[in-house]
Amino acid sequence: MMPAILNTTRVTPEEFLEMGDASSGYELVDGQLRENPMSTESSRVGGRVSRIVGNFVEEHRLGWDFPQETVFRCFVDDPGRLRKPDGAFISYDTLPKSEYVRDGFCETVPDLVWEVLSPNDTAKGIDLKVDQWLNAGVNSVWVLQPENKTVKVIRADGSMVLLREKDTLTEPILLPGFSVSVARLFEQL
Image (cartoon, rainbow, N blue to C red; front, side):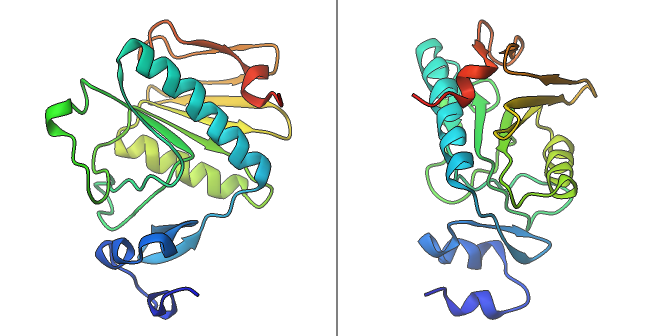
């Protein structure tokens, strides 16, 4: 059963945090709880990308990798906005180990986030998320489309590229040496 707080018109970040597990599947945008449901395939792909990036980041000791359901509160234009990307990376340069906070929301702007489209996502909704991430200071956003097996890479410098199954995804500045075929991101083992 969802807590009574979901019946109110406005929710604060503190109230969202108090919801605990009941906040799973929700984000906080403009003071409103927004359901963030994912399909099975979108969840699987998001987890796969997190595992691939996480393994690389750990092996090369580059920083922090964050899976789905990590709550970010890093939007200067709306301090009450809480977003949960399908995965994120923050370098040790951006968030040194000595400044890492274990509890609450992550208030550090990620260097890289990825969003995996679900059947219920709209182009307008995804564009809004991408804009919010870039306006917050994210350097690169990956938008994965399981249905078409494509990855759109949108960078803070305004560049954008659409990668298909036969292409290779790299992130030379943020993840030096990282390289993965787009097909591998969607692969069903």
